[in-house]
Image 1 (cartoon, rainbow, N blue to C red):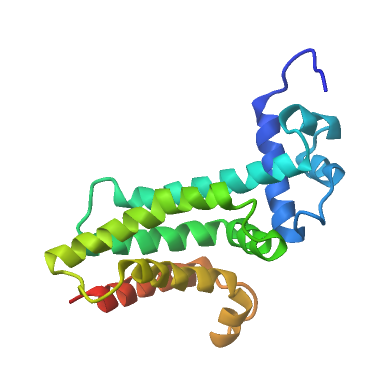
Image 2: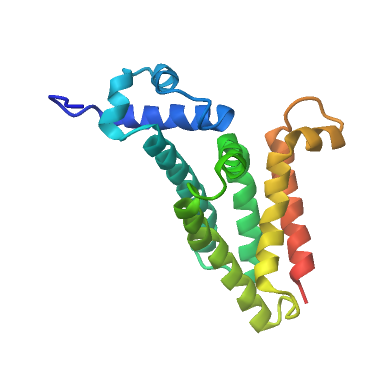
Amino acid sequence: MTLSTPPDSAARDAILAAATELFAAQGFAGVTIKEIAAKAKVNSALLYYYFDDKEGLYREALAQMIGSVSQQIGGALTSPPPSPEEGVRRFVMAQAERFFENKNFGRLVLRELFDAGTVRLETPMHAVVTNALRPLMELIKAGQRSGVFRADLDPRFAVISTVAQVAYFTLAQPIVAELMDRPGPVPVETARAFGAHAADFVIRALKA
């Protein structure tokens, strides 16, 4: 497609936001370019100015969301550099905040895992490991070396156990709501309370 003047970058942001929401709700195959354009309030042809095709748009939506969320979570470990115990607490609390405020994140990743395996997730998942999981693992190893955390734990398993709590709480909302005898979505206050609980739970499990 050829345009005489480049479109406003806000249009690209609107397209990505609309695509992310639709892909999270309906999956890659269930969404059309026309639906994305209608939700973004742009002409369908404009999508091809920014993206080669629907596949390219989908990959960009995945990469942008996963990269952004992982950077935000990993950023909790950098400013200022925390002690191992404080770092784990910051990580879990940041994960709870980011996951709960961005419902599309968990839905999109889970749907992609079920629909297409890990092919489209290779690059975004590398960002998750680099931005968030490896820094957390290094923090746990530092705690083990200093004697604060148990030396008998495999730090790789410890990382998985740490992130699994908030991930399950976020993705299994109907089960969580039923367990807590609450109709409808779990409120943000409950999600934050769970984040604090999960952080305490992990730290007690890690401590020597």
